[in-house]
Length: 80
Image (cartoon, rainbow, N blue to C red; front, side, top):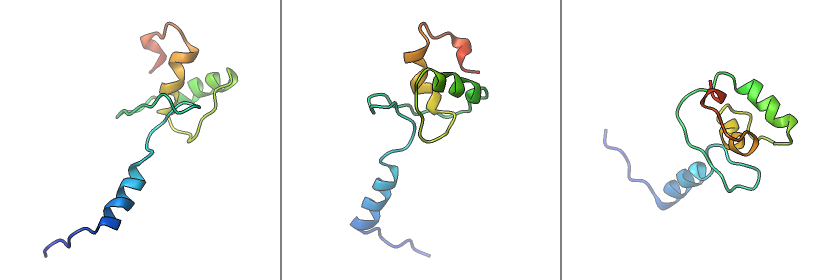
């Protein structure tokens, strides 16, 4: 079976879906793309929340963009 050709609207729809993927900070100046899992992210997220950081969505990757601003110097052990 031959695949049907994509239309311009198909491609624009796919691009719109991918436009904002992954965590960023509150003002949108820092973004992170990673492949993995942060096992202790709930503890880190709670700590950062108590420092005034806000998160959306609730993913483990979101703590990555907030840690450098909150913890200086950032120890390698901060991400488990």
